[in-house]
Amino acid sequence: MDKDQKYKTLVSSGRYVEAMAVLDSLLEMNPADDRVLFERGKLRWRMGDRSGAMGDYAKAVELNPDSPAVMALEQARDIADFFNPDLYNP
Image (cartoon, rainbow, N blue to C red; front, side, top):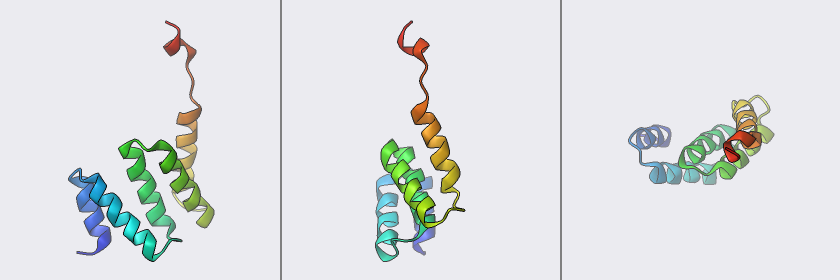
């Protein structure tokens, strides 16, 4: 089983820490792989590491301006910028 398939299998079974290790090893071999950075960003977001996810999305966009990370970064920034005062002042 190649590492891409192993990563997908681990994520689908909820083994996020192990999946992160696979992505990290892929990035060690090729730090300029925008696709792996995008996937790691998605996994970080799922794990609750919002700033880490946005950092990975930004790096992926820097490497490839046509990456799907462009949309993910835009959406993550929209979420981070959202503020509803009614939620804080009932």
